[in-house]
Length: 232
Image 1 (cartoon, rainbow, N blue to C red):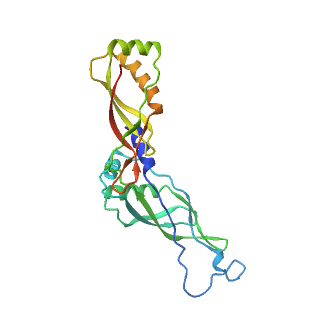
Image 2: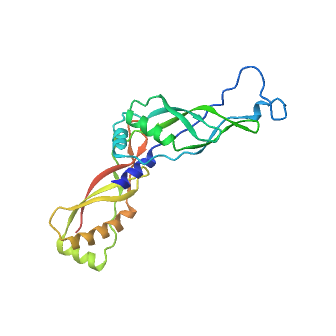
């Protein structure tokens, strides 16, 4: 489950922008030498690093419930040292869970501070954090499914038991298999036989391709699907 959450978190999109530091409409900023600063010498803050927190089960469920992608608009002050303070929600996404996730993530960011000439100053900025809806309206479907050539041991097992497997697969937004989430036989097989078959299926799925699942806006997202695979 953690692997799936991580992959979904990679589907979680981030856009960030900063506003200029508040500048009076009249008057001048002076450099340390008393020379008026030009507009080019007044630098707005910018993001230096923007790590996102790991996605929890609650946050993943909130994203899967979104009827469409949403933004949480975060307002904060960038200190002279480039750290965020006074972080709050300026405009809600409509989800308390996702709003809090945005706040928690932005609190860990670092910035290049605003500058007036060569002096770092505090500046208030707004940052939109964009959450892509993970609600699947068009599931992923198989495009190419070919079984690998079995080893001698694998072929003997297949010829003896003719197993039918139900695979639950994690499919990326690019249409490739991330991993086998679950594997079940339709008939009883020993743990040893299942270990052999799982290894064989892991070898086979490397070449499989799928159409990407789509969310309500037609954006490609990750998905989980179940595939029945008869081995004869």
